[in-house]
Image (cartoon, rainbow, N blue to C red; front, side, top):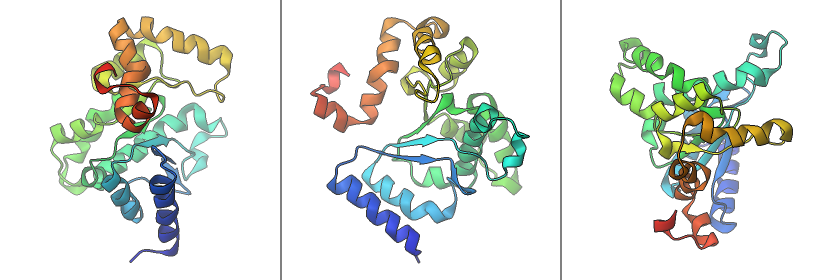
Length: 226
Protein backbone atom coordinates (compact mmCIF):
# COMPACT_ATOMS: atom_id res chain seq x y z
CA UNK A 1 0.00 0.00 0.00
CA UNK A 2 1.36 3.40 -0.98
CA UNK A 3 1.87 6.09 1.61
CA UNK A 4 0.65 9.68 1.12
CA UNK A 5 4.12 10.98 0.23
CA UNK A 6 4.60 8.27 -2.38
CA UNK A 7 1.21 9.07 -3.90
CA UNK A 8 1.95 12.79 -3.91
CA UNK A 9 5.35 12.34 -5.51
CA UNK A 10 4.06 9.94 -8.14
CA UNK A 11 1.34 12.43 -9.05
CA UNK A 12 3.79 15.31 -9.35
CA UNK A 13 6.26 13.19 -11.30
CA UNK A 14 3.54 12.02 -13.67
CA UNK A 15 2.44 15.61 -14.28
CA UNK A 16 5.99 16.75 -14.99
CA UNK A 17 6.79 13.85 -17.30
CA UNK A 18 3.48 13.33 -19.08
CA UNK A 19 2.02 16.84 -19.20
CA UNK A 20 5.02 19.14 -19.04
CA UNK A 21 7.15 16.68 -21.04
CA UNK A 22 10.22 16.76 -18.82
CA UNK A 23 12.99 14.74 -20.48
CA UNK A 24 14.28 13.26 -17.24
CA UNK A 25 14.45 13.57 -13.49
CA UNK A 26 17.18 14.22 -10.93
CA UNK A 27 17.59 12.81 -7.47
CA UNK A 28 20.11 12.50 -4.68
CA UNK A 29 21.91 9.40 -3.50
CA UNK A 30 19.94 9.65 -0.28
CA UNK A 31 17.33 11.83 1.40
CA UNK A 32 17.59 12.01 5.18
CA UNK A 33 19.24 8.60 5.16
CA UNK A 34 16.81 6.89 2.78
CA UNK A 35 19.03 5.65 -0.05
CA UNK A 36 18.31 4.65 -3.60
CA UNK A 37 17.68 0.94 -3.37
CA UNK A 38 15.27 1.29 -0.46
CA UNK A 39 12.04 -0.61 -1.15
CA UNK A 40 10.08 2.53 -0.25
CA UNK A 41 11.17 3.89 -3.63
CA UNK A 42 9.96 0.87 -5.63
CA UNK A 43 6.72 2.53 -6.84
CA UNK A 44 8.75 5.49 -8.11
CA UNK A 45 11.29 3.26 -9.83
CA UNK A 46 8.47 1.23 -11.35
CA UNK A 47 6.93 4.38 -12.84
CA UNK A 48 10.27 5.60 -14.17
CA UNK A 49 11.08 2.18 -15.60
CA UNK A 50 7.74 2.00 -17.43
CA UNK A 51 8.43 5.37 -19.05
CA UNK A 52 12.15 4.64 -19.64
CA UNK A 53 13.00 7.96 -18.02
CA UNK A 54 16.68 8.93 -17.61
CA UNK A 55 17.67 9.73 -14.02
CA UNK A 56 20.58 11.95 -12.96
CA UNK A 57 21.93 11.19 -9.49
CA UNK A 58 23.97 13.64 -7.44
CA UNK A 59 25.55 12.66 -4.13
CA UNK A 60 24.36 14.12 -0.84
CA UNK A 61 25.63 14.24 2.71
CA UNK A 62 25.50 10.80 4.32
CA UNK A 63 23.06 10.11 7.12
CA UNK A 64 25.90 10.19 9.64
CA UNK A 65 27.64 13.53 9.11
CA UNK A 66 30.18 12.71 11.78
CA UNK A 67 32.19 10.67 9.29
CA UNK A 68 33.41 13.94 7.75
CA UNK A 69 35.24 14.87 10.99
CA UNK A 70 34.23 18.50 10.42
CA UNK A 71 35.90 18.67 7.00
CA UNK A 72 33.80 19.68 3.96
CA UNK A 73 31.32 16.93 3.11
CA UNK A 74 31.84 17.20 -0.68
CA UNK A 75 35.60 16.61 -0.42
CA UNK A 76 35.43 12.86 0.19
CA UNK A 77 31.93 11.96 1.35
CA UNK A 78 30.23 12.83 -1.95
CA UNK A 79 32.25 10.23 -3.89
CA UNK A 80 31.59 7.61 -1.23
CA UNK A 81 27.89 8.40 -0.96
CA UNK A 82 27.67 7.52 -4.65
CA UNK A 83 29.27 4.19 -3.75
CA UNK A 84 26.72 3.65 -0.97
CA UNK A 85 23.79 4.27 -3.32
CA UNK A 86 25.11 2.09 -6.14
CA UNK A 87 26.02 -0.65 -3.69
CA UNK A 88 22.54 -0.67 -2.14
CA UNK A 89 20.91 -0.68 -5.59
CA UNK A 90 22.86 -3.86 -6.29
CA UNK A 91 22.36 -5.62 -2.97
CA UNK A 92 18.61 -4.97 -2.75
CA UNK A 93 18.05 -5.93 -6.38
CA UNK A 94 16.29 -2.66 -7.13
CA UNK A 95 18.53 -1.81 -10.08
CA UNK A 96 18.10 -5.27 -11.58
CA UNK A 97 14.32 -4.97 -11.20
CA UNK A 98 14.13 -1.73 -13.16
CA UNK A 99 16.72 -1.98 -15.96
CA UNK A 100 14.99 0.41 -18.39
CA UNK A 101 16.13 3.49 -16.46
CA UNK A 102 19.29 5.11 -17.81
CA UNK A 103 21.03 6.30 -14.64
CA UNK A 104 23.73 8.96 -14.70
CA UNK A 105 25.98 9.40 -11.66
CA UNK A 106 28.05 12.53 -11.11
CA UNK A 107 31.78 12.88 -10.43
CA UNK A 108 32.96 9.91 -12.45
CA UNK A 109 30.81 7.58 -10.39
CA UNK A 110 32.72 8.52 -7.24
CA UNK A 111 34.89 5.61 -6.16
CA UNK A 112 32.85 2.97 -7.98
CA UNK A 113 35.39 2.32 -10.79
CA UNK A 114 37.99 1.54 -8.13
CA UNK A 115 35.76 -0.49 -5.79
CA UNK A 116 33.45 -2.34 -8.18
CA UNK A 117 35.28 -5.68 -8.13
CA UNK A 118 35.55 -5.54 -4.34
CA UNK A 119 31.80 -4.89 -4.02
CA UNK A 120 31.00 -7.62 -6.55
CA UNK A 121 33.22 -10.09 -4.73
CA UNK A 122 31.59 -9.36 -1.38
CA UNK A 123 28.10 -9.51 -2.90
CA UNK A 124 28.77 -13.12 -3.95
CA UNK A 125 28.80 -14.19 -0.31
CA UNK A 126 25.58 -15.96 0.72
CA UNK A 127 24.75 -13.55 3.54
CA UNK A 128 24.82 -10.63 1.06
CA UNK A 129 22.73 -12.37 -1.59
CA UNK A 130 25.10 -14.74 -3.34
CA UNK A 131 25.18 -12.70 -6.54
CA UNK A 132 27.33 -13.86 -9.44
CA UNK A 133 30.48 -11.74 -9.52
CA UNK A 134 30.47 -11.20 -13.28
CA UNK A 135 26.82 -10.13 -13.29
CA UNK A 136 27.43 -7.72 -10.41
CA UNK A 137 30.42 -6.13 -12.15
CA UNK A 138 28.37 -5.78 -15.34
CA UNK A 139 25.58 -4.08 -13.41
CA UNK A 140 27.97 -1.68 -11.69
CA UNK A 141 29.49 -0.86 -15.07
CA UNK A 142 26.05 -0.35 -16.60
CA UNK A 143 25.63 3.22 -15.42
CA UNK A 144 26.64 6.48 -17.08
CA UNK A 145 29.20 8.62 -15.25
CA UNK A 146 29.94 12.29 -15.89
CA UNK A 147 33.32 13.99 -15.72
CA UNK A 148 32.48 16.65 -13.13
CA UNK A 149 35.50 16.73 -10.81
CA UNK A 150 36.79 13.62 -12.58
CA UNK A 151 39.19 14.84 -15.25
CA UNK A 152 42.59 13.67 -14.04
CA UNK A 153 44.64 11.11 -15.94
CA UNK A 154 43.99 8.44 -13.30
CA UNK A 155 40.26 9.07 -13.12
CA UNK A 156 39.75 9.09 -16.88
CA UNK A 157 41.85 5.96 -17.34
CA UNK A 158 39.66 4.22 -14.76
CA UNK A 159 36.47 5.38 -16.45
CA UNK A 160 37.61 4.34 -19.89
CA UNK A 161 38.67 0.93 -18.62
CA UNK A 162 35.58 0.35 -16.47
CA UNK A 163 32.59 1.67 -18.44
CA UNK A 164 34.02 2.47 -21.88
CA UNK A 165 33.80 5.68 -23.85
CA UNK A 166 30.13 5.12 -24.67
CA UNK A 167 29.06 5.78 -21.07
CA UNK A 168 31.16 8.85 -20.24
CA UNK A 169 29.41 12.26 -20.27
CA UNK A 170 30.91 15.72 -19.98
CA UNK A 171 30.22 17.40 -16.65
CA UNK A 172 31.67 20.50 -15.00
CA UNK A 173 30.16 20.97 -11.50
CA UNK A 174 29.82 24.66 -12.33
CA UNK A 175 28.91 26.91 -10.47
CA UNK A 176 29.95 24.90 -7.40
CA UNK A 177 33.37 24.50 -8.98
CA UNK A 178 34.51 28.00 -10.02
CA UNK A 179 35.10 28.86 -13.67
CA UNK A 180 38.82 29.16 -12.99
CA UNK A 181 38.86 25.41 -12.28
CA UNK A 182 35.99 24.18 -14.43
CA UNK A 183 37.22 25.54 -17.76
CA UNK A 184 40.77 24.11 -17.56
CA UNK A 185 39.33 20.81 -16.34
CA UNK A 186 37.06 20.46 -19.38
CA UNK A 187 39.90 21.39 -21.72
CA UNK A 188 42.14 18.75 -20.12
CA UNK A 189 39.78 15.82 -20.74
CA UNK A 190 41.03 14.94 -24.22
CA UNK A 191 44.72 15.05 -23.28
CA UNK A 192 44.39 13.39 -19.88
CA UNK A 193 42.11 10.69 -21.21
CA UNK A 194 44.07 10.16 -24.43
CA UNK A 195 40.84 10.51 -26.41
CA UNK A 196 40.70 11.17 -30.14
CA UNK A 197 38.24 13.54 -31.81
CA UNK A 198 35.66 10.79 -32.35
CA UNK A 199 35.86 9.84 -28.67
CA UNK A 200 35.38 13.47 -27.65
CA UNK A 201 32.32 13.83 -29.85
CA UNK A 202 30.80 10.90 -27.96
CA UNK A 203 31.74 12.30 -24.57
CA UNK A 204 30.70 15.87 -25.35
CA UNK A 205 27.30 15.23 -26.91
CA UNK A 206 26.60 11.93 -28.65
CA UNK A 207 26.30 9.83 -25.51
CA UNK A 208 24.01 12.38 -23.86
CA UNK A 209 21.75 12.69 -26.91
CA UNK A 210 21.42 8.91 -27.09
CA UNK A 211 20.09 8.97 -23.50
CA UNK A 212 17.77 11.91 -24.23
CA UNK A 213 16.27 11.17 -27.68
CA UNK A 214 13.57 13.79 -27.06
CA UNK A 215 16.28 16.46 -26.85
CA UNK A 216 17.85 15.17 -30.06
CA UNK A 217 14.45 15.40 -31.71
CA UNK A 218 13.89 18.96 -30.47
CA UNK A 219 17.34 19.96 -31.72
CA UNK A 220 16.66 18.30 -35.05
CA UNK A 221 19.62 15.95 -34.67
CA UNK A 222 19.15 12.77 -36.67
CA UNK A 223 20.05 9.49 -34.99
CA UNK A 224 22.77 8.61 -37.50
CA UNK A 225 24.56 11.92 -36.83
CA UNK A 226 24.49 11.66 -33.04
